[in-house]
Image (cartoon, rainbow, N blue to C red):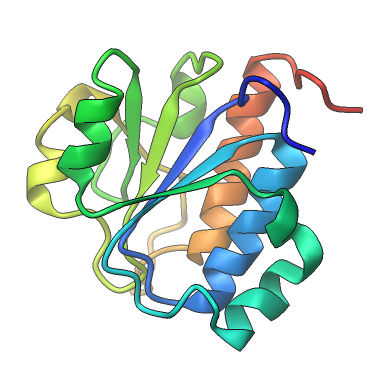
Length: 160
């Protein structure tokens, strides 16, 4: 069930793995978050694996598609955007999320491009991890962690 106002906005910049996006759809539906997908996508929206990962949540998801990040940013120029990246120094729980904020996540293989990260360097956030040769957490896990923190900060509106 989509309510009149989203809690937060999740942005996936050119996602590549259908199962991750399907899992993120589930998270967005259950946190009343709007999902914004930036093309090109690394899969077809009708992809069987994508649908399977999202189960029957697709019908309840609030999803918008954009041909570029600039198109999304221009449409919501008065809103606050945060950018999840391993290159940030600020942790995701050190910012004060507000209802309607946008949280942008990059591609599974390469993260966010420099031009997006450099556009608002004070709004870069990260999840702390132990030092390792591995790059980062799985995208759907990262979205879940950060989106639940943002939703917690705004008081879990319309959630049981």
